[in-house]
Image (cartoon, rainbow, N blue to C red):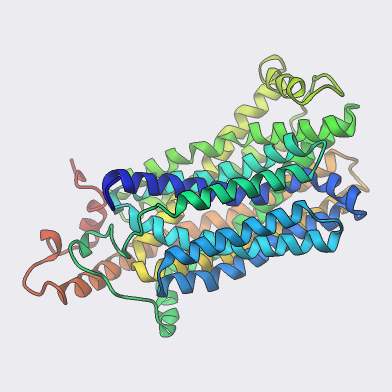
Length: 486
């Protein structure tokens, strides 16, 4: 692989996608095992759920410090350090002999995960050009969703008999990925920006830049939308519990019910893979109007709400062999998709709902890169991630309280269905904030483009950047792809 050549860049993107997936596997393996971990460590299911909440919060807070450090220094050592920290924390969690030790391992893992998420976003945004930003960001964002799903599946499959196994396997995989990361391209900051072609971009974030970041109105909406969106998404961490409760209500034993819940939750969230379509549609509409990405995200999030409500209440008839081996139960669950009409219907609804809400992810990533210069992107992402983490943690806690409160009036699994459906209302303000972002994004894109042109002119005072003509707002949208307008 040539250093910085096409093959090296492709390799680097693949490694970042794998790392993003592994990061989320480390988080996703815990929820399916709440009951199993709590039983062995002598605490309630709520105590283990609390560790997930704490993990979300610490990861989000740590991301700000790591992101700021990454925006000021060489990002590669920061990413290596973050990865090693979460690997150690995950292994520690799997070896824990008591609740305190388990919680400490989760805290350590969360600290490292915060560093990886924020800094890797900054690097990936510099690896891809604006015209492919939505598409490639959809792969990067998809890897995170796939990682969460894989975590749910790995937790259920590897952990339904021994909850420690998935933690240790994930830690080993993280070490292997760290080794692969050492050979990735150390991409220069601003490398993919057409305004900065051929120059050595030395700008770094400064302490006084925070007001500048917050002055961009689009950043405000992009940061705040995650608070309400992640309350809804955070509640869906309990989706395996809903399906487990449905299985137990039909008479299945605890071990089989856990496996059923994990597999069903994984299958029903496969629609997140269609976030690629959201990235493609966002790229295409962005070529016509600077509002394109924001409008795609807004419409997708709002349209999904009624579909989620339907998904949680449609009854499912589950027919799998109780008490059999893992492979037999999984085959039974997959067969239900075809043989049981209620399961097939739920799958269709879930795929469309996840497809619509997942459209926000790649467009959110892309808009952060569109309206911010390279030295600000990691920090803006981390601020958004902080709000996301607070919302996700809040959703995880509040929905647990809602389930307990509803249990008096609605026996399981109905209490889970009612609680999850109620929390989808938080997607509504998210959709509104994306619409508000669509009204400010054109100005912020133009201002950032002008600032980058000015930075480039200091190095090339006698020529325009890459021969591009002066940029108007509509022209800037067209520059998202060389073929715009054709």
